[in-house]
Length: 194
Image (cartoon, rainbow, N blue to C red; front, side, top):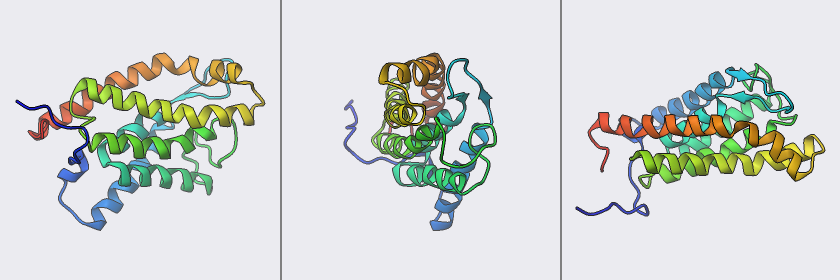
């Protein structure tokens, strides 16, 4: 039995739904909408202007499910529509300002990267899915933390303490959930090892 190459392009879950451009537009809009809904699950964190939300989980799951083009497009749509005033960022807010806006910008890059990794089999097994989601989380932090530093006039250590450390346990839970959901979805399709 050969081990599949991570370099070879494989279908993502959305590719299993037959369709055309209309399907892709619907999937992108639905991915943005799901992220907007997940953003309304908000838990304030004492000592930080960044709350715990379901956004990151949704953004990474959308990326893995839709692939890099549609996943990145869904997150870009989410960002642009929210920046234009639709109140679907955390806690029914809008506008691309404030300490947590950088994390939303990071969703675009993370959604595309996670989608690219998923198209190379990064969502087929629990271990690969966990690694894929961890890399996506790192991308969100790589964009969000510098934005937080600038928006809240924090040094790097303070920004890491306020914008990363309080979220690590939640990230582990979300990664574990994705590591179970994605391979399970593939198993249901009967194409998990394709």
